[in-house]
Image (cartoon, rainbow, N blue to C red; front, side, top):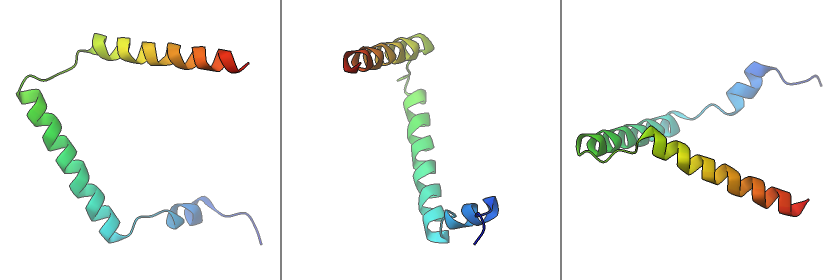
Amino acid sequence: MGKPTLSSLMTAVEPTPAEAAEYESWFRRQVRAGLEEAHAGRLTSGDEVEAHFTARREKARYKSSKKS
């Protein structure tokens, strides 16, 4: 038996119509919630996001260096 093709792999993970509908519903709820937060003025600045993830990366690097 040969290697699986990309097409066969994609078909293997294709969601069922019910799964696709459930995801679409979830996604729309997330977008709606995000828009409501933004309209209410509850936003996080780009600088705050950068600082948060810089700290997370540093923490991960520190943990990684402790294992070595």
